[in-house]
Length: 66
Image 1 (tube, helix red, strand yellow):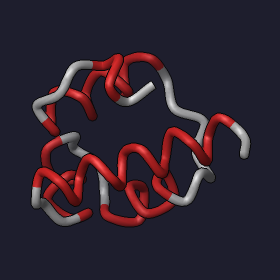
Image 2 (tube, rainbow, N blue to C red):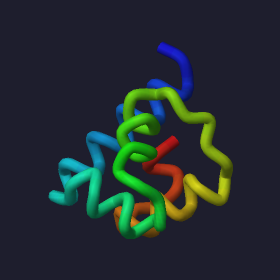
Image 3 (spheres, rainbow, N blue to C red):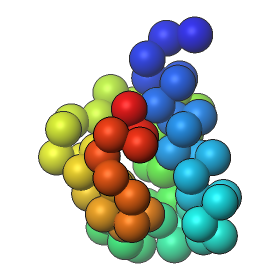
């Protein structure tokens, strides 16, 4: 599995564990739900800044997403 797919799967797993929807995560990172869907599917090449935003939105450490 490539790194984008692994990262997306981890984000999805953490998001579900935290108990928020894709739409809520999208609101928290100021993106749209389709972006989060593509990210979780492993179709996005995200920046370090975006990874940090996602970690903050999910209230986890960056390393837990990597």
